[in-house]
Amino acid sequence: MTRSPAIGAAVLVLGAAVLAAGATAQERPVPRDKVQSGVAFLAPDQRALQQDAFANPGMLWVERGERLWREPPGAGGRSCASCHGDAAASMKGVAARYPVFDAKAGRLLNLEGRINECRTAHQGAAPFPYESEALLSLTAYVAYQSRGMPVAVAIDGPARKHFESGEQLYYQRRGQLNLACAQCHTENWGRKLGPETISQGHPNAYPLYRLEWQTLGSLQRRFRSCLSGIRAEMLPYGSPEYLDLELYVAWRAAGLEIETPGVRR
Amino acid sequence: MAARIQVPAAAKRGEVIEVRILIQHPMETGYRVDHVGKPVPKNAIRTLTCRYNGVEVFRAAMSPGIAANPYLQFYTVAEASGELEFFWTDDAGTQESARQPIVVSG
Image (cartoon, rainbow over the protein chains, first blue to last red):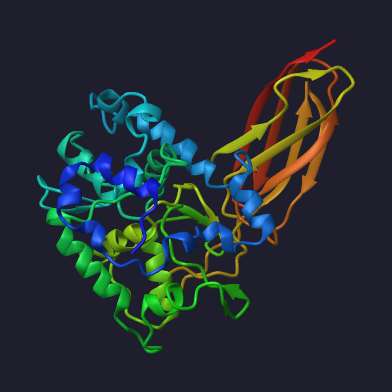
């Protein structure tokens, strides 16, 4: 087991509880020095598009998210900004530690889940439907505030069972092609699948703009695309299984920088 | 639908400047069907024009072969401070516009 100083520091930030729980004793499926963001598997023009702060099409959603951040959901309601103020300060680093186990809700929450939790509990508004333009925009705007910060999720305590369930899902073969996530993204990354180079399957740029989708999409949409690709049954958006898998893949990506909004094929 | 426009923050008179625009638009081809099999009507931006202080400096004829959220880039000569105005129309008949101020010195 190897552990980089960056992760060591991130763990310290999360508090002594993490160190005590043995979360760091987990075997790394992709060695620490070989972990690469999906951007490394792109063609140069696609990489340039992600890095161009103006032309990156995902920025259209980030801009809309910024407007939603300041807009109250209804007459007399409170906007995100009413409580959280300037997102550049209050939301910095948040995306890097999600998904998290929320004791009050008693379940694992990703950024989308946290936004909807806030809407129902504090804003007196209906939750945004999963994969709606509004939810994608607000999620992208919140995640954008963590750009450049290393992914560091907690997998100890109550999150542990979700982590283990996510890991099991990651290694479980499924669908008519009888493939597990691990067979492409852990065992064969860097090799070709048709014309595509298989990535390591890291979630550090979501929500991201996929050229195939011609729009911004969530990590769960990516999961569903993969499941459809291996001809497996797709679970509905927001399923607890997807959340567990989100936690596991976020742990796999520990140390990678948040790139939201990413650009991918 | 949103759009982003970029011009240099400051330009000198007579300088060739780069103008960039990114428009949020589905650019529907008309060949797709929705999840219940109903055809999605064709809806693409057909024309886009740019006027610089009222004078047309750029015009594009577009088609559904262009990807969603089109990005365009062109060059013009900075003449005077003022405004760049973009106008575009799609198959659904929606007319939209966006504007960006420009500051020219000298």
